[in-house]
Image (cartoon, rainbow, N blue to C red):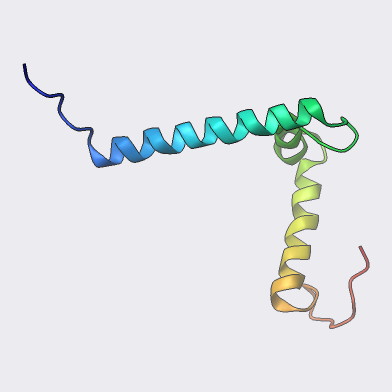
Length: 85
C-alpha cells in the first residue's frame, strides 16, 4: 500500500490558518456566552461594529486618528496639543 502524498506547503499553511481562526472564534464565542453581554461582545457584534454599521466609517476615521497620534505623537494638523477623546 502506498503512503499518502504530503500536502503542498502552501495548502498546509492555509489549512492550519483556517483551523487556528476557527478555534479562536469558537473559544471567543464560548467566553461571550459565559460572560455578561454588557461586558463581552461576540465576533459577529465586533464585525458589525467595525464594518457593517452606518457609523463604521466614522469609527474607523476616529481610530485612525488615535493611532496616528500614538505613533507620531501629534494631531494630524500638526498641533502638539493633547487630543481630548
